[in-house]
Length: 102
Image (cartoon, rainbow, N blue to C red; front, side):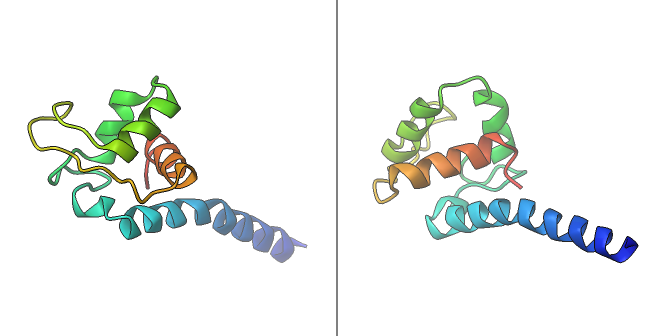
């Protein structure tokens, strides 16, 4: 009985962690990780800083920013547009970043 409970808890943890890995994979595949890291500034801000700044923001506005890019919010280096992302992919990335991007 104890081993069944432990197995269930481990499986649940792996299933719960899977979306986080998948979203980091999406960020990598989409080229986002070339300029951003989870916990430190690269060319662009760390995703943890983005999450702090935009925690109370409208998700649709952030999806639009991800897809269209921008300049001036975090300095003079522009974020290029990510027009190849679908709306669903951009929404997934925004939720991942706002959720703590691990």
